[in-house]
Image (cartoon, one colour):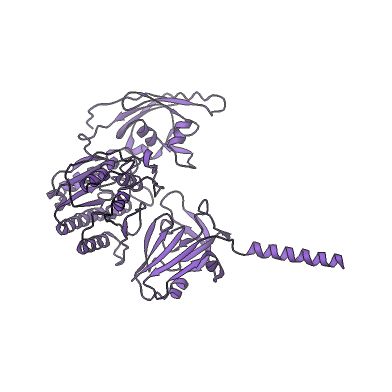
Length: 372
Length: 157
């Protein structure tokens, strides 16, 4: 594996548990080289309620890391082992009592090898709401921190949300000839999603233009936010915002005109239903803001694993659907094609694909900005 | 004579307390049934509690997050509610929760579904920790498609 740089992060596990293990503190060297204190309070701040352990990913992300390739762990027996992060991240947890465990290993010291992105990061989820609002001549949502990806104005904005179509999978699909429509659109920008790479968390960032620690959607179990979204901005401006979703909301779409797309034809996918509903919206008159969310790649990826024939079929279906929607789009429309996260192979009993770690397959996403 | 009156009063008080304990709790909640129906309904929690209840025993709750769980539920068959509203042939229903969450559930997925008022024989009345006051429970589908705090059921033709 090619590394642009390798940052050895000395996590000096000063597990000097004072008293009965209540007070502890570990110094973590952050991605920018500055020290970051990790202690019980810091972990609690990163945890959702009721959690007793925290994924190590979450701690590393809070310290500024976005992609991790491997870690070298020195156990309590003094033996150092290098571990591929993609393989151990599922079982890497930091406990409230200060214990750092990777599966059945207890770590006394750990260093982190950072995987550089394949190029400069050109877009983030927080940029989408800002870009869409600027194109429509509206203010960004109240807590937005993102940057506009273009200065172009447009009469309409279309956001095509390709669930779980990560950047790594995009490059593989391109090479395999699965995505003729997307291939014809040129090379997408390299995007970095938010942690944890999950639909609800990324959706909140997309809608609010604010990162998780500001919009408060810090884990996948949270499905709504009180922070202002772009649909609220659109509604307050007297414009029309429509969301075409699958059969269930991964995240609540407050202030959007909502169209759900159940699998009424019982063919095992809602993507054809989403497409039909999106085309019906366009046929009735393109709203100012249209959000169309295809779930099929995510569903097939979880069930069969990325790269499986069923997942490839889902990619082809979504690519075809993108082409049909773009063909019906009125001129003067800005199009943003995005993904919320990617997917990696797992070997659980109930699923063969999952996402949620600081690895390229989960964190990197393609972002298309198609100007009018 | 006075002792007899006290006995009667005591019995009345005990019976009243027992009845109160057995009855449904007072909960401010309204379930609306609309869409492709002939008679849109607006049902209060008390309305639902007064109807004939059915039990779903030891239903496996397949969760997308956390461990699966087995629980028993009691409530009003959705089929009865939709029949009362005059829903004829329909493709699906859209259930919308108080927080804006919404889901479309096909007719096949609705088989055996109830508007649940009790979980494991205990009234579910609060948002937390009950995930109530009412919950759409469809035993044929994973639990991540069971909607709690349902406010509206819209029938789709």
